[in-house]
Image (cartoon, rainbow, N blue to C red; front, side):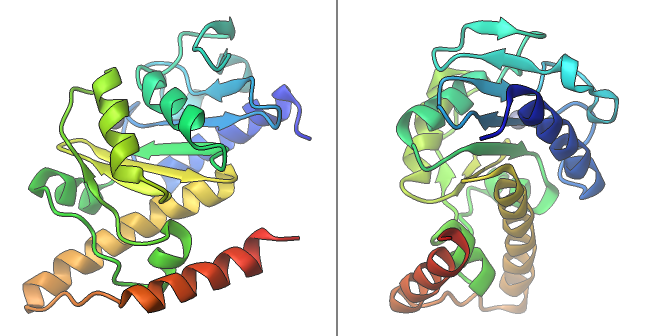
Length: 215
Ligand SMILES: [Zn+2]
């Protein structure tokens, strides 16, 4: 079981990785992790550059969003809280504004289930949520509905939300969604973006969950 201090450290590292992997710029985007007990959420603070963040800068809230310690939480806290509330399988959330995935979100273009690694980690394609203003409970509501039982969704005219059973996996998913969005955009330009079959998607997802998720 990870302590609160360890969770804060992991969010600091995750923030640096988002910058290094080109998934966000400036202070946009946010990251959170949920404690094993489910009653504490560590989330990046509002409006602070990722490369300057320290563990003590993190916001700690309870599952209703009450601040327990630290700085003012990211303005997307309602999005994070809604997902943790509805999806007990999610323990970490990474919200990015990565370029190709956001281009799809601006175009209202879902990313089809077109690549082995995408369907393995996400569980299918990545749907675009209905538009709502950033930071609102409407955004959280629409994002949940676009997520369904999958691990990622696109937020219209905004960015990506990637979920995982761990922060490591949520970051990997954010990266793979960006890669799939880029490949999808290029494939469409070439004239034919073909998707995988539902049977193969289920097979690959089950294989991944069994091989990588169970001890
Ligand atoms: Zn955002």
